[in-house]
Image (cartoon, chains in turn brown, yellow):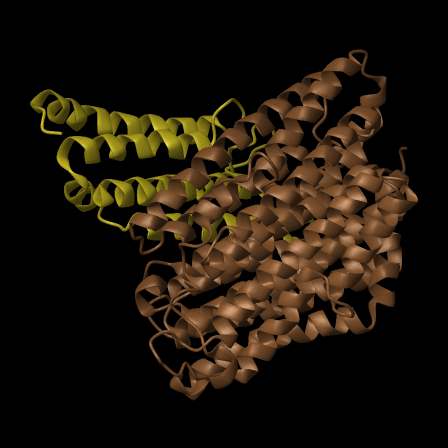
Length: 499
Length: 139
């Protein structure tokens, strides 16, 4: 049991050390690919175990809960680890061509794998302070990736990113301190068990708000999102793809975990705020995107607006809504990472990601156009692509809960998303290239084409699979939601029988 | 910054800080301290060095690239954690070796916990210095 849970956590760090030792040759990047392939296998093994047993937990260092650090995986954690491994594998293949030798020598592959380790750690830990440590691991490594081989833009974006994230970290840490003061434990399951007996329930709500702000910064929700569009369009495309896919989603995961497991005492207050945040995040994100003219900036603002959908699912807190949030998380990671990878290919062939300066991709690179069409219109919620089902479940949950306004907002934002995607489609793909260039994929070497297009095609295929057979995924999301809304199994598994 | 007071002061402070950081590292085993805080204190010694004499001199004095130190630390910490698995224990379970153990004394205890802490020390020391040096050179 220990190994099933610990392997996906230890592997990325092992890969990082190996890739660093071999950073002067070609071996480093292949260590990264191989390491992430093994990570995928390990995470699938974890998933099989979780499907079999519901919730599994392991105590690190032989210290039993609630004293030691517990690793725990329920449906949500397991699926997040699997999707992380898939994204990491796709991006590490893409990086074979995308990352030049200079960045490799500076330690790109090591930082990348440490980042993946931090993400997996955050998904698997059952200890609040340990969660903080993984957030720090992610922050340091992502800062390194962001400014790697830096130009001015990168440093500028990196400083904004780190400053705001440090504020969030301080709030998070203070919140942990207060919770520890009230309950005397850091184990999340144990906190959930004892928090109801705390006398000062007002303070609990205050702490809940501190966590909401702290994770809200990480998840880039309204009004704390502005660091994201400032930072995500500057680094290498591999880096922004993995950031776009995974980093904000760790914040969303932490919100879902804390606000279903721990802070479920004053739902009328906390989740009402979350609902407002969700609506405003969706609207500001999509409006921000409409004003942009650079592919990566448009996509960055859309991350913000999509985060709103996931928070909406959490805020409604009905079984269907939480299932929608889980489904949305999985769909979104695949689609978003893929769109950034495609933007990278567009820059390589057409010369820029600025929509005024590119064009003609549909005529000269029809394959890329099809590959873009799938995730872009999935993001916008076209049936029968995966985004349609994600939005469908959430809107259905909102209507079921008689949240007419939020349902209307979600539908409207969906429409505006179509507008943005159509804009990219019309500008980058349909209109002729302004300089009369012919941005065909054949400009790339066959090797580069393989490295860049195979991960994109793989992720697009996943979008199609989720889209055409949503049933098993929706069922899974509903099971995950049931586990989240009734955390008894989680708590008893972690604490070894004491409920 | 070119200040003779700072440069002369640094000559003494740098060594003292590194020494103190090692003390903190060892002390951390049973009392407040440990690898993380030790690494932070140790790195301030070299940050001070870089401020007083420039990063080129600080890199020279350090001899090893800070990135290499950090990754070596990560490797050590990882090995210390996995080591327990060879004895069939859960990962990161401390493994102990008592040198000169007698009936009424435990002798000198050596544990994987210590090696894990040394690894953490090096990770923190190395990554702080790589970031600070890179930022200094950028500006």
